[in-house]
Image (tube, rainbow, N blue to C red; front, top):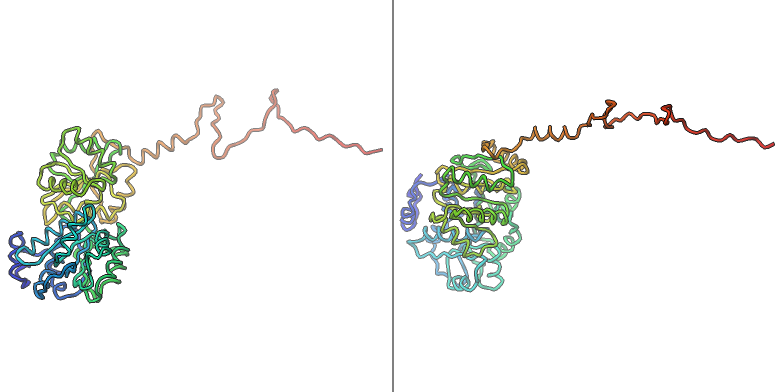
Length: 433
């Protein structure tokens, strides 16, 4: 189905054509029409399926249908998103959709000074994109008024809940009008997301594009069993042998990211790291350099797992498996986007096997195992046999008797002469005469 069949404004169609979009994705086909009609929507679709256009286009169209002068500090639409990077990306993407209109778009997020953001808000804008914490700061300083906000969108709602933003989100909703239209988009639908949806949505339409927690069909999944201490060596070997030109690597901690970065730097591999200890400017430059192919490897913690659209990315490496199985879906969603093929590679240590089981149950398929010569890990059965053998009683006594086991047979104590050692008799008592 083509965008031209929706009857969108010529300015929006012109922008979509400039972006190279003609055919709608399934989530766009299912969500744009009800959202444009003003209905609340709960949409569940995997990453890389075009969710941004699914909620942005109907909002842009409604703003054009009912033009109003922008008011200082009073946006008509608010989009909440969990991370700074995603807020920036949404602002860029939606501004591209609105490039031939007078609709103004801006993003506010932490890690930068508030002054510039405050000036943009007070100058007046139509669509405000924000992370929850920074938006509350602007609300508390009376920089923004949401009383007349007509549209409220929660993007990556499940991630916002995972990151502990639920109280912030509820507080923000209290500052908005009950007459607003609310759209809730999420890659996974958990019990917490369902509970939130029933509290904030009214007579909503539920859209499920794929089975729950599905991964894109265009992504191939493989895993390498490897000892934790040898993961850096394995990564270096595969980077050289497989000729990975651009690869996004996820680690579970900042320390792991920094260690891998140091190893790559030593080998003179062009790389950058993106985690919470880095400044917003540093993270922005790292992502921009990776997108423009100036660097070969981008190392990131979970902060980069959601919503980042990196064109043509073929390889995602899970240097460590994520703590939550659901986060695996979001990590590997950076590849195999928009119908392109991708490869998700995971390094799995003995300690991560249970997490791997959880991931396989979540995605509903077994991940292909690849054993790399020189990096073999002993299998679980042989390990258990070795432990069992070490626990067995030894049989080294000259008399052929083993050590006492679980059911020892105690021999009677003997005297030096070899006879049985009998208990001494109690002295007899004589009667008094």
